[in-house]
Image 1 (cartoon, rainbow, N blue to C red):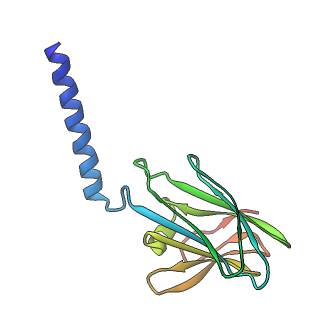
Image 2 (image 1 turned 180 degrees about the horizontal axis):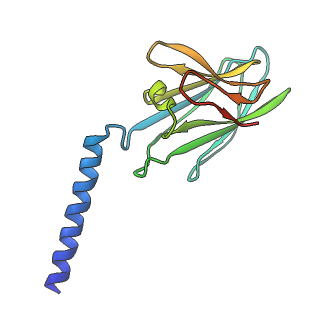
Image 3 (image 1 turned 180 degrees about the vertical axis):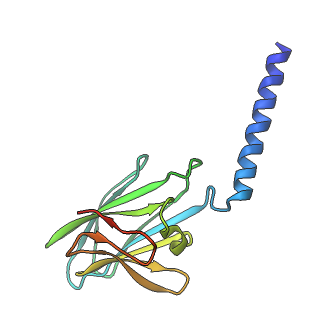
Length: 153
C-alpha cells in the first residue's frame, strides 16, 4: 500500500511539473481569449451562430454597428477551435473565428475582432489597428497576408 501511495505522489509531482514547464515555455497556454463579431453591414442585421466542440453559443442577431463577443481559455491540448456560421439576406459563410493552429493567433493577440460587411469578413490586426480582408464574400475564399490560403467554398 505504501508503494502505491508513493507512485501516486510521484505521478502527480511529474504531472504538475509538466504543466508548469509547458506554461513557462509557451506563454499562450491557458491564455484567456476574447472574440468579437461586428456587424459592419450598412442596413441589415447579421445572423451568427458560433460554437466549438465543447460550447454552442447559440443563434445571435447582431444589429448594424453592434457586436457579439465571448471569452474563453485555450485548452491544455492547444486544440481550441471556434467557428461561426454567418447569414444575411444575400448569403451565408462559415469561418473559423478562433483556432490555435492558425497564424491569426499572432494578429489577435488575445482579442480577435472580426467585422463582416457587404464585401468581406475582416480580422483586426491588433498590432497596427488595421483590418485585414480574410474572407471575400463573393468568392468564398479565405485569403490574407498570414501565409495561408484556404478555400471554404
